[in-house]
Amino acid sequence: MTPRTDADEVAERPRIPLSRRRVLRAAAGLADRDGLDSLTMRRLAQEVGVEAMSLYHHVANKEAVFDGLVEVVLDEIMAAVEEADAPPPERDWRAALRARILAAREVLLRHRWAPQLIATRPTMSPAVIAYYDHVVGLLRAGGFSFDLAHRALHVLGSRALGFAQELFQPGDAPADDAAAMEQMADRFPNLAGMLADAVHDDPDGTLGFCDDQFEFEFALDLILEGLERRRAAAS
Amino acid sequence: MTPRTDADEVAERPRIPLSRRRVLRAAAGLADRDGLDSLTMRRLAQEVGVEAMSLYHHVANKEAVFDGLVEVVLDEIMAAVEEADAPPPERDWRAALRARILAAREVLLRHRWAPQLIATRPTMSPAVIAYYDHVVGLLRAGGFSFDLAHRALHVLGSRALGFAQELFQPGDAPADDAAAMEQMADRFPNLAGMLADAVHDDPDGTLGFCDDQFEFEFALDLILEGLERRRAAAS
DNA sequence: ACCTGAACACCGTTCAAGT
DNA sequence: ACCTGAACACCGTTCAAGT
Image 1 (cartoon, each protein chain N blue to C red):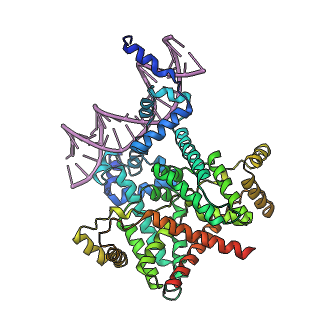
Image 2 (image 1 turned 180 degrees about the vertical axis):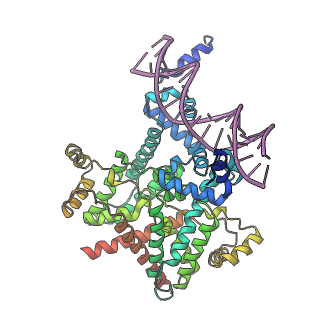
Image 3 (image 1 turned 135 degrees about the vertical axis):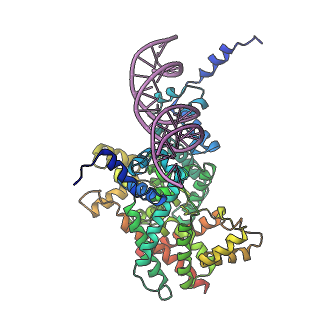
């Protein structure tokens, strides 16, 4: 082994030249680890071992990084969706779409920051378009008119990619505080009743009050059923 | 008229003392006018005629401003929902809920920044809780078990407040570009077909391709129907 | 062509000081 | 009690300069 100087080490790092792809991968990793808020150009540069300003040779600006992140996730989703085993849509479009959407959901669960990003920047990137094209093709094979397929996209909304818009996280509820609980019963009798009922069913507490996966599938099945009824009525 | 000095004018402004309420109203106005991104503490201070640092006597920090904005919108929604005329839920829960949700939607259309804010910060503010309590009460009156009412909240998601999560804005489509159109037909045959079909129905062009209000109501009705089927099946 | 250092114009927020 | 000015520690981004 020849002795190595610091200069050697520094010189070796840039062997792999920086690229848009590598920048975006690093950005995704950073977001996975520390959340979207901690994704700054300076920290991102540090992550790939470069000065902040070098990033601008590969991405136009920070907005472009966010757009790129959506692409990265959607490519991952497309890959997962293609591997999902499901019946051919001609035989059972509901099962086919269901399996694909649940596969997409698993990708999103690995990238918790993705829904927020997709929600706030509804971009027309090729990756999103490709995904929609895939879904429409599936619906068409299942007997949908173009018109009803269009409608179906809107009904599904973000659920097509495997996430649902929640208005609040019941997990944060200070349900253990008895005084707060009583006050809540006064001001919000219906919610309090609902909570009490759920606790009755699940004596362990309210931790598992909302099973996101269960609720997601319940909602998805309700929607798929509604779409099937409209498809059948039209044909 | 006595001559006025600059000092007089300056002295007169703070007649109305700053308050949390006034800060939040100004923040909402700023967001309405210039969007959420241009809402900075410095600009907000300027809006209420004060130095930036004075704001911190009325709100803890910028996060608290955002939380406050959600409250402002939800208060407005609660007011609109209570004024919406609809049958009593005991007679027709679907019509009752539908009218309220569409009333909420009108408030959100006046505050375009609100969905994004609500989507990214699912907070447990009293205003949100109050709204949910209201909805659960309505469903209960319509014959729902607590359990199914809980499920209904999840199925509705953000639609309970009158907005849907869209994955992209078809309005941005460069559909007028014939070359791009042809390329799209190759890569995305299903979407291209859907678009062509829609244009056929609406020869004016693709501008009105997606009627958000129509799609929202279509999806809402599909969901309400599905919920009613489950309610009827359970009873 | 690719990367850098210094600089600019902004942020949110703290703190000691004013009235 | 309420407001301020100066300052701090950060941002994203530009630009001229390096290799």
